[in-house]
Length: 170
Image 1 (cartoon, helix red, strand yellow):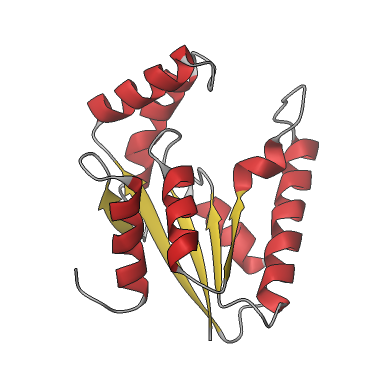
Image 2 (cartoon, rainbow, N blue to C red):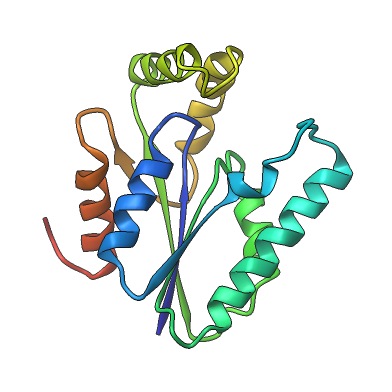
């Protein structure tokens, strides 16, 4: 059986670092970061670009799910509204696929510190701090397993996700 993991959370919470560590623990697997589908200049969120990005994500996930060599498909993205994940899942053939959804969270002060450090390093625009903080409460009511990342390394979070998927207790 294949396992499709959806990992969401606000920007700066550590999704990329966690997924990189998670891929090393879940083999044979593949990882798709939804942000890769938005890497364009100029960056404009329009209905046309949003449709293109969702189509590209769906196409890639579909191909990964059909690949008999893969057991774990990891997908991460901001997905601050549950409708985003629902839309993507509704486009996929999921027979024989177990879907597991996780939300990575942290305290607002931790998120602010992380986003400010990213902005200072030129990795994010300065407005990312306020946008990230505004999105944080939107995740709390989502139907996902929640993991607080404040005092954990990406490797520890990845280990917790992998243990959950494999039915192990840490």
